[in-house]
Image (cartoon, rainbow, N blue to C red):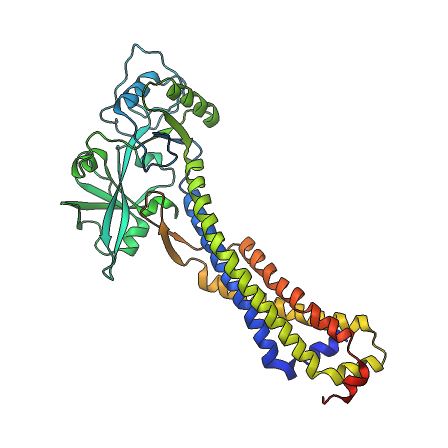
Length: 415
C-alpha cells in the first residue's frame, strides 16, 4: 500500500510540494541561526591559546572595566624569573618593565629572547569608523607592547610590517581591511583628533583578532588621554600551563592593592562565546519552533486533503484485503518521506546560502566583531531532525483517519 500511495504523488504534486517547501523553510531558518551561533563560537575559539593567560584587575572577567595598576606590573616583573623557562627569540624588550635581581625567581611566566617577561600590557579603546554606505561602526583599537603580536599564536602579517614603538602607526585585521574602505597599507585614517598611518594587515586564522586594530601602547595612551592606564596583561605561561597558571595566581594573590585574576585566554573567549551563542539560540529556537508548528499544521492539512481526495481509492484497497495497519503506515510514511525531502532541500539551501556568509555582532568591549557563519554537520543534523519531526507529528493524525475511514461512506464519495 505504501507503493500505491507514493505512486499517486504526481497526481497531488502541488499540494505535496507545498508541504516539502514549508519543511525546507523551517530547516533553513533553524540552520541559519545555529550556523550563526557556531560561527561566532568558532571565531572566538580561534582567538584563545592554552599557554596564554590574561591578567585582569578590578574583579571583572573582561577587559572592559578592568585596570591593572603599574605597581602591580612592576611587582610581578620582579617576582618572576627565567629558571627552566622557554624563550621566544626575536621579541623586543618590553619598555617600562624592569626586574629587581635581588628578589627570588619563581617560574610561571615565560621570558623572551631579551630575558624579559613574555608579557604585553594592553588597553582597548573604541573608535568610530565610517563604512562605505556612510554608516558608522565602533571598532576596537588595541594598544599593546611590542611583544603583543607574538603572544597571538595564529596571528600572521599578510601585508606590510608591525607598528613601531611610540609611533602613531596601526596594523589592521583582515576582516576590517576587507569590510571598510580606507584601510589599505600606506593610507592614513583619523581616530579622534589625530591621524594614524596604516603600516600592515594581519590574519589570525579567521579568529576574533581579525576584527581588531593594533597599535603601540604608549601611542594609544597618549592619543586618547589614557596615560599610564593598562586594562590587561597578556602573558605566556612557562612549561605546563595548568601548573604555571596556578603559580601565577599564587603570585597575584600576594600582591597588595587591586585584586588581580589570571584567566586562560581560551576560557576568556569561551565565556564570551557562550553568552552570545546562548542569546542567538534564545532567539533562533523559538522562531524555528513556531515555524515548525505552522509547518506541522500545514502537513496535517496537506495529508488530510490527500486522504479526502483519495477516499474511494483507499476504501477500494481496503476491500481488496489491505488491513487498517498498512493503511495507517502508508499514509504516515508518505508524510515522513515528504518531510525528509523538505529537510534535505532545506539543508542544501542553508549550506549554499549561509556557509561562509559574513556577519557581525557587538563584542565584549561594545565594539564590532565580524565572523563567518559555519554550517557544520551537527547544525544540519539538528535542523534536519526538526524537519523530520514535522512529518512524524503532522502525518500521524491523517494516518489515523485513513485507518478509521468508513468504507461504505468512502465508496459513495466522489473520487
